[in-house]
Each structure stands twice: as structure tokens, then as C-alpha cells.
Length: 259
Image 1: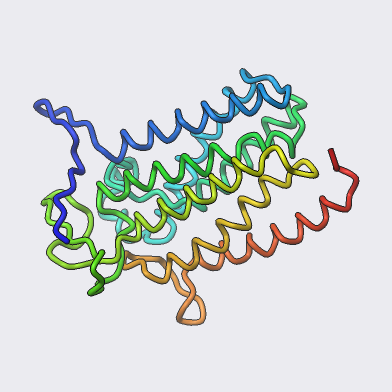
Image 2: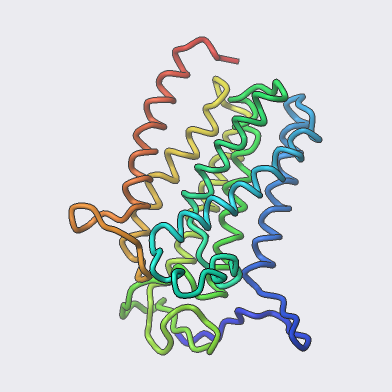
């Protein structure tokens, strides 16, 4: 299948609108809209959720970029300014997730918001935001897959694409879109049936921690250092978080935080 993706959606002289950036913006506003809706449904202040979302966005962008730079520092030594060119791709989700969690915990503690209920409020929006963001990856050509001969293989041929051109590749970005959106559907349908606060958040961490390492198997872009000559950094983090999530679901379910 030949596809001519458009990393640059519109261009006016030296000003360009990057499809990756546009999809990230749509992802953020979709996620925050769902979070506000959930906050209103459970009786929390939507304005605090909106403020928290903006802080999380800043922390996530910084964390995801720093994590990417950490995985391949030599690329940025020759051109340090490239660190700030996030429209060229290079945002590692787990770096952003870890930084976002730290920022959220500080904000929640400072404002006195309920920690686990707030985490549940944010989770569906986070999942659907990821799905939309991966569409941006698809257009940009980042996070591309390995060469394959499958009938649904994608061949990038746009000169500005970050993916190798002229080769049939696993559409790993679309695998992630499907996976992340499926997680969103599970969370959205389950959100009114949880037994304790924190259940939705840790269910998200569990499902993503399982599905992300599977998709990583088919990724063809640079994955950073490997462990045991097989596991990428993201796979190690994903499987570790999935284990932590399983433990937390058991612990919270027995700790008296039931609704």
C-alpha cells in the first residue's frame, strides 16, 4: 500500500502548520474536554481539572522530550537546538507520563484534591488523547515499524517523512491508535462501574503496560538501549508498570477506599 502522508499540513512562506502538532493540540483539547465532563459528573471542580491539565501538558512535553534526548544523546550533541524542535517528532510517552504524574501529585497535594479520584477523572481523556496523538505520529512518519510483506503494510514516500521511504513497513502508529482507542473504550464504559477510587487509573496503566510492549516488537525506529538483547527501555518500563498496576489494584481494592 502506497501512502503519501503530509507531515506539513499547510505552509505560508516560512510559516508551517505541522500535522503532528495539530493532532497533539486536538488530542489535548479532546482529553481535557472529557476530563471536565467526568469531573462534573462525579462532583469535582472542572476548573481545577482544567488547571491541572495545563500543568500536566507542560510537564508531559518536557518529560517526554528529555527522555527521548536521554535515549539518544549523541544525536543532539552536534545540534543542541534540535532538542526544542518537537515538531520533528521525538516525544517518548513514558518520559512524559512519569513527569506528568510527578506534576499532578504536587498539584493535587497543594490544592487538596482527592488523589485517586482525580487520577480516575483524567484517565479516559489520557487514553483517547494518546490515540489521537498517534495519528499525528502516522502523518509525521515517526514511531515507524519494521519492514514487512503484510497486505496492510504502509510505504512512506513523502520527502519530509521521518520514516524510511520506499519500504513496506508495519503501520505501528495505527496499531497504537487502535490499541489506545480500545483502552479508552474500556475505561469509558467501565467508569460508572468501578468499586474504588484509583481503579480506573490503574486499569489504564495495566492495559497500556501490556499492549505497548507488544507493539514495540514491531517498531523499526531507534529504541534506545536494549536489555537482555531483546527488551527496549519502553518495554521494560511498560511491563514494570503493568506489574505495579496489578499490585495497586489488589491493594486499593482491600484498603478501604471503596465507594
